[in-house]
Image 1: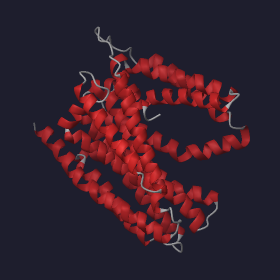
Image 2 (image 1 turned 135 degrees about the vertical axis):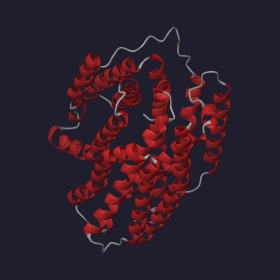
Image 3 (image 1 turned 120 degrees about the vertical axis):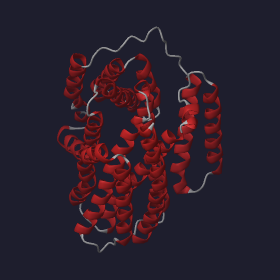
Image 4 (image 1 turned 90 degrees about the vertical axis):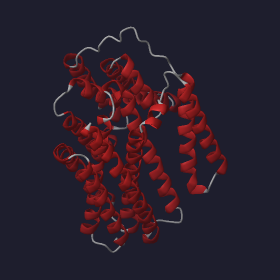
Length: 394
């Protein structure tokens, strides 16, 4: 799905957010109806691919509509969307498990239908029509799309393979494809990803990098904590689920607070507070052992949730202050791709650190890695917020 995000985000910038959003809903509707009827694994995978295409359209087109049509409290609306996204991530696996247990796996597709129909109806009735494109046509950067998918896939395979050892050939391939993609896009008049723009605007590139690192920390904990709770502390799955709520619920609660805080004092204080709280969380994680109380572990998870809630939405809203409305689709698509890259890096760290087994020693190794990442984030936050202050002075 993440491969499609920048592509579809760019399409929404050209062809209209409402149109692309409705097409995305239609694709999800088709896949949700046909997937449960699949007679083979290949058909099921095909329906999931269609669903991925559809869902890839919803975020960039949705954020584009927010920026285009909502003029007051725009950051708060984006913050509300982030709260819903966090809530879905927190309760989605639990709800899906219950649906599968009591209704079978097709129910997880059918449950989408009323949501899709309601979303389509509200979009059709209340979102204004897309403005005419004034004769502009989208020039498909087919080779750019292929190269983008190829270099992202190669890096993903390389990072995920680190658990089994260092693969030099995949590293060379990944670097080579990245250079090839950069050189090709640099020469395009209408590239898939405007690498020249990113090169000339380091602030935006650094915000994406910050988002990758913040996501890396959050998902490292999201991957590690449930297995540590079950295998090392020997909690049951139901209690593990309750403990993990501390991570998601505090991220959810903190998101709207961070939005309003940034409106009052600017982005620097919430971002640095999030980074600082994350460092405290990493230190507390290092101090945690298999004999630690559940209250202590809940506190550690809550700190990471608060840290992510502060940094995630602040970085998103800060990014859009540097992006023109007409570029929202591609910008939000790249933001979600950055999230995907952070997920892959977190999975790689998990695989490498815990390859020898999950215990307090390997947990401490992960804490040291996350501490280094947390410290790297801070100078970047000073830089991007300083650039924001300069633009406000101008």
